[in-house]
Image (cartoon, rainbow, N blue to C red; front, side, top):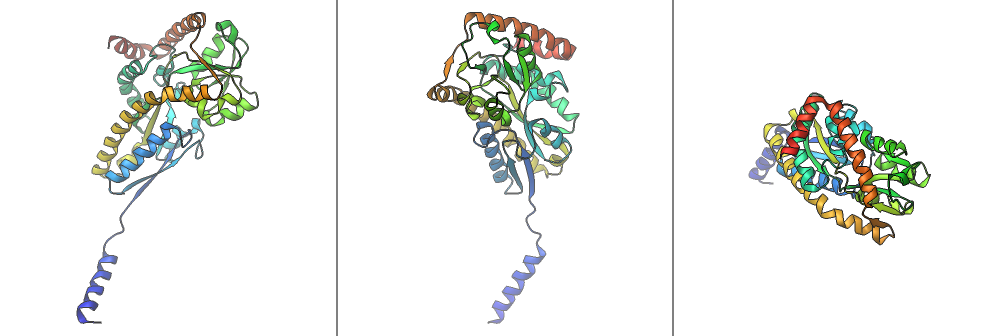
Length: 325
C-alpha cells in the first residue's frame, strides 16, 4: 500500500468518527382509521413530504386503525407525549369544548363549499383551544356528507324510533335520542364487529366509513342526507414541534398546508366513488324523502340552538361570521 493510500484511509477514518451521525427525529403518529382510507393515505403523503423537505431529519411512523391508541385516547396520548402526533375527528371531544362539535350541527354546513367556509371561521378557535392544551393544529380534512344507514325503508323520522344508533359524538347521540332511538357509542375501528353482533342496527356516518366497515354485510339502505361534513384534525405535541430546528418546523408547516389542500380535494373527489361502491355491493343509496328531510331539519334547528346555548357568545360569534361569509 502506498504512503498516499495509507494517509487517505487514515483521514477517512478520522472524518467518520469525528462527524456526528445524521440526527433523525422519529415521531409516532396515532390514527383511528384504516391504512387505505384517504385520510390515512393523505397523512402518509404528508409524512413523505416532511421527510423529503427536511432531508430525512424528521421521520414519522403511522399507526393506523387504532393500533397504537383507541380513538378517544389519541388526543390525551399526544398531550402527554406518548405519541408526538395524532388524528381524531373533531367532534369526538365536544364535551371538552363546544367548538369541537360545531361541524356536526345538522344542516348548518351541508356541502363542501359551506364546510370550508365554516372551517375558515372555526379554525382560529380550535387552534386557541388546542394551544391551551399543549397542542398545535397542523391541518384538517373533511369526511363526505353524512347519511343514515338502516336495514329497512325509512319514510320519516317516526320510522327511526327504537333503532340502536351508532354514535360517535355528542351531536350524533342527541339525534338518536330525538328520533326515539338508542345511541350506542362505537368508534370506527369497532364498527364492523358492532354491526355483526347486533350492538347497533342503524348508523349515522359517511359513505366512506360505510365502505371501510363493509356495512353492506349488515345493513341494506343508505339515506344520503347531506346533513353535515365532519372533519378530522391532525395535531402535534407542541414540545415535540418546538424541539425541531426552525427550518424543519417551517418545512413541516408548509407540508401541512399542502396536506390540507390535498385532503379537501380528495374528500370531494372520492365522495361519489364511495357511493358507487356501496351500490355495486347491493345497497340502496337514495336521497331522503321530503318527510324525513323536514323532520330532521327541525331536529337540526333544535340542535343548533342547543349548541349555541352551550357555546355562549364566542360560539355565536363564530356562527355569525360563518353566516355572514
